[in-house]
Length: 214
Image (tube, helix red, strand yellow):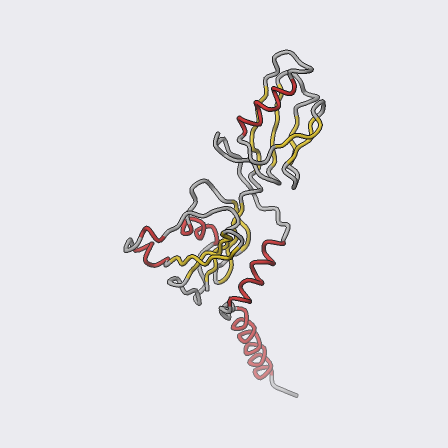
């Protein structure tokens, strides 16, 4: 029979081996990274999305809108924008929402309602910005899908990921971006940006961008 000390030592070695495997650096092969990006983009997460009162915000598919028609509760409602960019309202059937600002959509709804109502007053609020997303992968504490806030930069986005693992190469961070049907790789030297040597290296993000921390 093996001594308790031997059993305890064996269990400790197995535990350490498991920890080391869990902390192994993420693959740096571009094909493997691309596979991770596709997996993340095909997920159907429910990230906590903030509302916006930005009048220039462009509504997108999967955004959630609160539409209020004054003194008309049967028409007022909260609803998502469909993947085809349309919404459906009583009395109006389908109408285009994606690509419009909340003010433009308010005017469009009011214009259509004038055929059946007297002086309708319509307010549109973007309750959830589900169409504006970015992805963070690699050597970060909490990777995944995050909401894209107005004027967000790469460094600001990385602060949402809970920090870096010990294996992170902060000089080799890059952003994968689809540009004219091609995947573009934009480098971001985190250390240069944070130190102030090259603050211009902190690029502004676009919806659909993927930040990779190798």
